[in-house]
Length: 277
Image 1 (cartoon, helix red, strand yellow):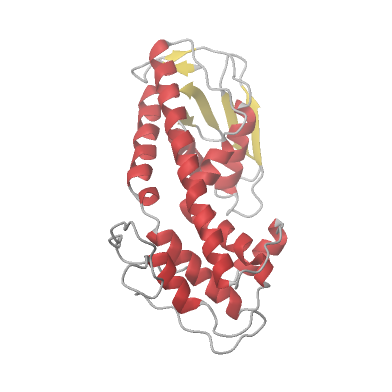
Image 2: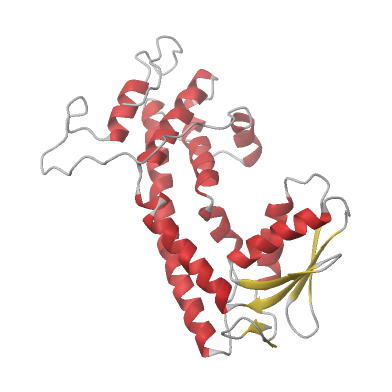
């Protein structure tokens, strides 16, 4: 089922490939904080998807949170007393998703200072807590991935075939797909920077793959990380090589310089405090 360009009248269409799985992933992620909640998803006979929870506890609250996240993906949803109905693509919500993706590209994802600052703080704190240097980059990247939020949102839609028989909606879907590709590339650049900073803090230790349970072991105790109050002005690009200790050094280099321990990789003493330059 697909909503027309006004977002008011439903246009019946068969459920697209991967739609049920994508909806399940989105709803399971949203409902995860509510303990004991099991998300059930099933296709409707005439098109669309219905979602319900086995546990009645916090049902209304979780339903509305799931509806908000599904609308951000571009779907029209309606919340009933005991279940959530997904009635297809909506031009209104697809336009909203395009605006949100554009805002991410021009806002949080346009500047790397915050990612570099967060990576230095996390890596330094993990070193103090005894995290093995080889695991540092994987843990920092995972935490930065959660903070960016968009990598997980885009991952929820993997394998989804987005199609419509209406030309206006096809154009909207193509616009959203293009913006999502740009956001995915920019998020990859942020995560690559976070991993590079973490490896520098670890003293160049080789990186090891880290599964989810081991990663959670090192991230559960971190708590919230304070971020810079505002965006910092980037230093103008220079044609000459930058001296890390000089005025031409960028924020990433300066943060790493003041955070790397002044001892061997295995040591834990004499570690400089992380300060805002």
